Length: 384
Image (cartoon, rainbow, N blue to C red; front, side, top):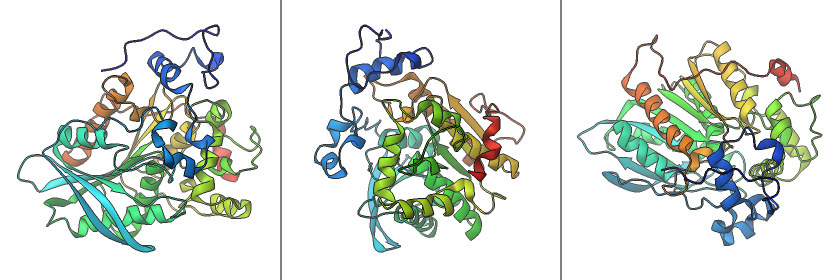
């Protein structure tokens, strides 16, 4: 159920430091405006404090924390699995539907800028997918920075995929029907893992990339943002939105990669597993579905990545959610959720179902909307 208050705050009624600027109001989803003004405009965002301060009271810095726990599922189990880069143990949460199996499986990698998030972050979505698609869903609690900096989260996540396939029989999983996906940082890592899968001969049914971070070179601490060095119109337009500004992205990078500017520049500009648009080859990758949000500074890089995949001959569908902020998919709380967050649940259910259970190549779902209005100047972005 979406929130019922539909009024849009006027300039006269706004009084909070994080209220939405007037020039953004006409295009924003009205439910989002109401939600943000009521619950978000007075808070201190996570990126406005240190990671240590945030961890003392995470709830105080996010009006959706913890997210809705979601509907009941037949069986939920936490497992501890080994990882090796560096050696350690991570937890995966396995959601299982009723039935004999073996089940297809979708592995989810939560958002949070490689710094925040846990197994509660996208629990509701995992539960909905388990029930609606009738597959196992595995949520991966990869290790977070700054204690486990770049690129540890990526390798933790990939080892979780391989561990699942290796142990498919004992987990009642169909090892030939595996998909992956994630939101934001999780979308970034899923894009990278699709390359790992191709390189290692792992056949994935789908890479679901939700508002993915595919090119964050503009997040260098002293980067001078303008149209001459950033071809992403969404970054130029939405770098100062109150819910997810560029400073927030730089805050994530600071803890994930480190504060040293030379190291940041080297990693962001040269290492494709940090910047997937720089990957050496885009051929023969898993089918992709890319989701973007209209009022998200990362919108254009996600859509640009989709065009790169398409141009390399891969099967790609994309959908842009109008009027939405970056993490709109998280706003699925029954009392204060967004209609488009619930639509996202239905859309992704259909996409994942089709990936695992089949659809004719020529058939097009009503939920599959390919975005072609990508900024024409993006052809220059790789030379930035």
